[in-house]
Length: 190
Image (cartoon, rainbow, N blue to C red; front, side, top):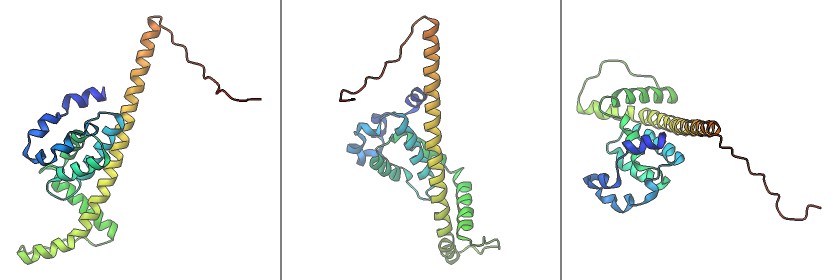
């Protein structure tokens, strides 16, 4: 079930090659390892996608392509997983990351009224930058690892269920399978 689900919703190499953003990476996109739909590759790709979704940068897809090429995991799954950071969810995600960064760095959260101006913006970027990056990286690693483990476990549960269902169906049909006996290695066992 997981493989068929991902195959149905995954863009193909040809579709991605049509986008202008992906043209510089055409040689990289031809690598079949980036399109493999295995349990491990999909789980790791989902983790990479969620990790990069927490990065407070534009063009997260370029970071995803670099990480996917390095780790050789499924590219479309990683890109789709990064879409949790969209214009609607990005604000709450960054507020959560900033709060966590402040907590980790033990810095107080500023609550007074701000006078918006260019000087204030630069001052705030300097003050907010470290807690924001700390929180984003922490939440990115946590959600990435949790996502990879969850996908891996759910995929494995699905495989076990399918195997048990197939075995029960074959038993009802009267087909029996005997387990192979392990052969002892040839050698002097005296």
